[in-house]
Structure formats: C-alpha cells, structure tokens
Image (cartoon, rainbow, N blue to C red):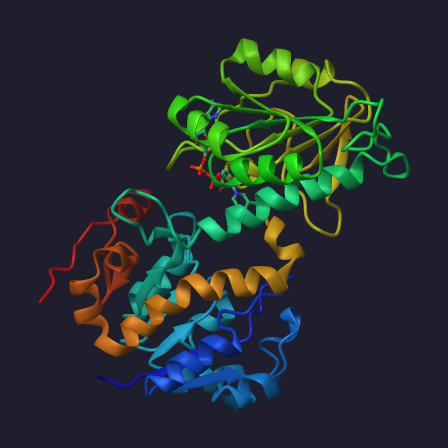
Length: 372
Ligand SMILES: NC(=O)c1ccc[n+]([C@@H]2O[C@H](COP(=O)([O-])OP(=O)(O)OC[C@H]3O[C@@H](n4cnc5c(N)ncnc54)[C@H](O)[C@@H]3O)[C@@H](O)[C@H]2O)c1
C-alpha cells in the first residue's frame, strides 16, 4: 500500500464557498496512512473550522502556494484559475471539476506543465451515468422548487399563491420538464410541499418508474411541443431540467408559451448552464438571481448549489473521496487500470489529451493511455 500527500487548497473562484474534503474524509485518508494538507480557512465557507480538520488528522498550511508545492495530489472543487497555473508541477495529479472542453487556456496549461488532470465531470459509470455530477443535480433540483416557492410570494413580485394551497383552495401547479436527476428531485420536493405536479419527459420508462416511486398529486406526461405548451399555460411554476448529453440544451419552452402564463408565475431554468431550455432565459447569479420577462419571474442561476455550500460540500466530498482513497492507495497507474470508472475521468496526462470528447472539443489529438 502506497502513501500519498494530498493537498486541499482553499477555493479562490468568486463566490465559491465549497471545499473538496470534509474532516470526516480527512480521517479516512489519514487512517489509510496518507498525509492530508489543508490550507487554513479552506472550510470556512462551508462552516468547517481549521480545528475540525486538525482534529481529523490534517496538517494545516498557512499559504496556498505551500499546499501546491508539497502535495502529490491537488484535490479541489473548481478548476484552477490562471493565478494557480504556475503553482502546478510536473507529474502532479489534479482532481476537480475541470470543464476543459470549455477552457482551452487551462487545458494548454495542464498540458504544458505535464499535470495529470482527472475531471469530476467525466468520471462515468458503465451505464453512462456521471456519479460526481449527480449530487449537484440533486441539490439544484431540490433548490429549484424552494426558490420558486419564495418568488411566488407577493412581496417578491409573485402571483401570491401558496404552493400547498389549503383545504378548499387548490395547490399551485408545478410543471417539471425533464425527469432526470434534476427533474425527479424537483418533483419530489414539490410533491412533498403539497403542490400539484406535472412531470414531463420523452423517456416513457423513466416516467413509468417515477410514477411508481413518487407519491402525491403527480401526473406524468410525454413531452411534445404541443403538450408542453398546454401544460405551461396552466402552470404557476415551470422547472426546466432537460439535458441532451454533450449538446446545448434544446429550447422546449418558447417565448409565446411564457407570455401565455398567468402574471407573477415563476420559471426556473436549471439547464441554463447548458444554454437553457427556456427561450427567454439567460444566466444569473446568486447576488441578482431573477429578472422579469412578460410579467413572468425568471430564476436562472447557473450554479444553484452555491447557495447551500454546507450541504454541497458534504454531498460532493461523500462521492469524490472514495476515488481519492483508491487513487492514493493504489497509485495512479494501478488505480486507472483497475477502475474503468475512474479512468474515464482522465482528461490529460504527461502532456497528452487522454479523453476523446475533450480532444474533439479542443481540436487536439486524442492519445489514450494504455494501462501498463
Ligand atoms: N443551474 C445549476 O446550478 C445546475 C446544477 C446541476 C445541474 N444543472 C443542469 O441541469 C440539467 C439537467 O441535469 P440532469 O442531471 O437532470 O440531467 P439528466 O440527464 O439526468 O436528465 C435530463 C432529462 O432530460 C430529458 N429530456 C431530453 N430532451 C427532452 C425534451 N425535449 N423534453 C423533455 N425531457 C427531455 C432526458 O430524457 C432526461 O431524462 C443539465 O443541463 C445540468 O447541467 C444545472
């Protein structure tokens, strides 16, 4: 069993309050005989003190640069920013959300430096699902209804409807378009709050399954433009949650559909990070989350989980830590050879682009790594 030095720097991206590893995760890695270096204050945004990390067995370092200099593996949440490129060293492993296809400058820096880049977002199970993206979709789906409920209130400019209704007054109608991770979680929370929910998708098997496992005032509906238009016209809340893997989100809700809604209703376009599935949506931030088009409130925050970093940090650390544990235990080569799910996360290594989709997006040569 090998031993590795794992470094957890503080996130420096604007408004990023998550941290890659919780104290509980530190204790697991330390028990395995590894050293974990945590930058002082790294957990503060998620309510985790330096003392908690220290008690779990981490060594606290006072500077960002020192974490980068001393660690074999840099374990963080978001991609490094330009000021961090030169802190990365040859042969160092970087495990984080990288989104290299959209960031050629970072891809070139990692290639130039000979960094091994493992991306959370391309770690892929044999059934094609993305286990390190799923928790963020779960959070975004659950938050979407919480946000919509808030903006339906009159003082927020909303129509003034209580999502749950009361005896003798019907509940609000929530239409969720796309029944994947985001949509299923939005529907679950809306049903739990007592709303009437219409859940739409083009995958009938998925609707069949969710129709069986979700309880409450739920209707499932096959998604055609005609049926989306009819449902949206009667909705108090629309949650847009469609995804076509690897593509820009298709526009499923058009501007005339928005105009047909009751004034003060709320639309949440969760798919806005993939271009949006509502014609009138554009990305917003937590400091200014909404705007109004045709009297309809639009909530289109591109990083919804950022509002709940405490939950997001634990959700992310829970699913990423086992990969770090395996990587540290087996060493890079052996971990990649033994774990095809983790191997899908490999984007760049020793100056080569090792992921086909990333190579295609960057117009670079795809050079797979053969397990040795
Ligand atoms: N804004 C945020 O903070 C945030 C956070 C997490 C995820 N997201 C985004 O939310 C979107 C959904 O993510 P997910 O994890 O639920 O994806 P997913 O793949 O689990 O689900 C997408 C669903 O959309 C369905 N679909 C495709 N075309 C459709 C159509 N025309 N009509 C109805 N349904 C259709 C698919 O059948 C699938 O069930 C993605 O764009 C993702 O990037 C945003």
